[in-house]
Image 1 (cartoon, rainbow, N blue to C red):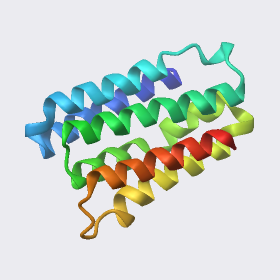
Image 2 (image 1 turned 180 degrees about the vertical axis):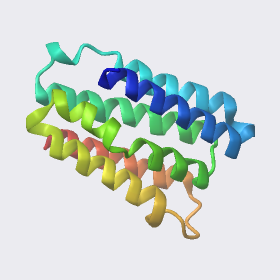
Image 3 (image 1 turned 135 degrees about the vertical axis):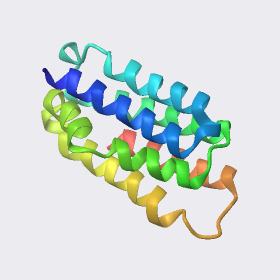
Image 4 (image 1 turned 90 degrees about the horizontal axis):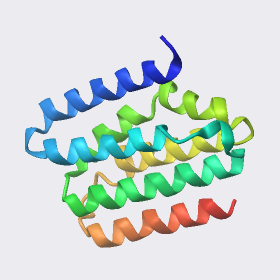
Length: 143
């Protein structure tokens, strides 16, 4: 199997895992993973490394905004980003954006760190949290 096929299989496992853990969010899970698959179906070979990096950030900004609008829980987002921060997923992008591979990995680590540790306290102001995430992504776009 090639790397993209391995990645699609891995994503399907994530869909199944999230659907088992969060059966009320099956529609959101399908939509979120479709966004990831649409992102992966882009023709990365025709893009520059910087364009891939910005495309990655823009796509994940849309994904996170959709997740917040769907009203999924903190634990759902934690599981989602734990699943996406995987060497298969991050490595796939790194193969196309070699000069930005480290940046992509660092951004994914920050997403995961945020959803796993930073946002697990009592801060329930979802609008403020989403605004902070969007501002961070916009800042990373300038780097």
